Length: 284
Image 1 (cartoon, rainbow, N blue to C red):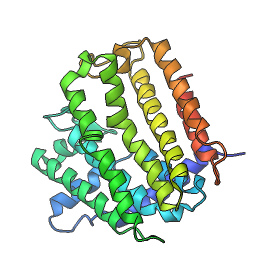
Image 2: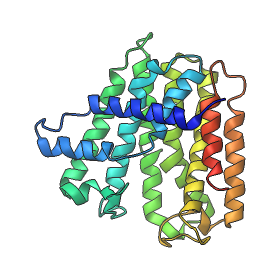
Image 3: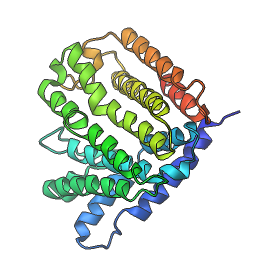
Image 4: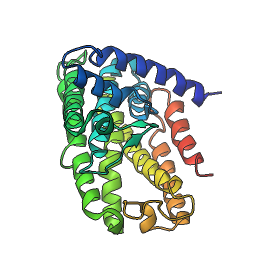
C-alpha cells in the first residue's frame, strides 16, 4: 500500500539537499545577499511544487532524476514570489513559516534583490538541465517564464492587490488560477517535458497541476477561515463570493477532475493521486 507520508518525507529531504547544494554558500560575497537567499528558501516549506515536478516525470514514464533541475527551479521561483509578496508595498508580512520574513530580517532593499537573485538562479538551473534533446532546456525555460510573468503569477498578484477583499467571483477565479495554479501547472508540465513525454501526456499532467493548484488555494482559503469568513477581510478569498459549503464542493470537484487526468498514464500515478486526495482530506 502506498505510504504518502513516507514518500513526502523522503522527497522533502532530497529536495532540501539539492537546495543546499545549489544555493550560494552563506559566506559567498556579497554575504548579506547569499544569506538572505538561503533564509528565503531554507526556513521551511512543504516543497509541494518540486515534488509535483518529480512525480510528474515518473507518471509520464520517465525518472525523477531527469527532472531535478526543473524541480529545484520551480521551488526557487516560488521562493522569490514569497519574498516579494511579503514586502511592505505588497502584503507587509513580517513572519512566514514561524520565522521573520526576508525584508523583516535583512531590510527591504536586500529582500527585493534576494528575490530577484532567486528568480535568476531558477532560470540558470533550467538552462543547465542535462537533457536527451538540446531543445528541452529552452522548453523548460518557456514553461516557467509563462507561469511567472504578466499572464501568470505577476498578473494574478497585481489583480489581488487591486481588488483584495472587494474582488468579485470572476476576479477570485482569475487570481486563484494565475497567482497559485499556474505554477502548479508549470511544475507538472516541466516534469513531463524533462521525462521526454509527448504533447498529449504533457498537457494531461499540466491539467492535473492546474486543477490541483486551484483546489489547493480554495482549501487554503477555507482553512484560513475557521469561523466561515476570512480572518483578514481585506484579503482576497473565495469565501467572499462562496459559502463554505460551496467552496468545499468546488474543491472536491477540482480534486476529482485532477485525479481523472491521471488515468492510463504510463508511469506510477499513486503519489499524485494520493497527494490530491490528502490535500482535500484536510477539509474533512
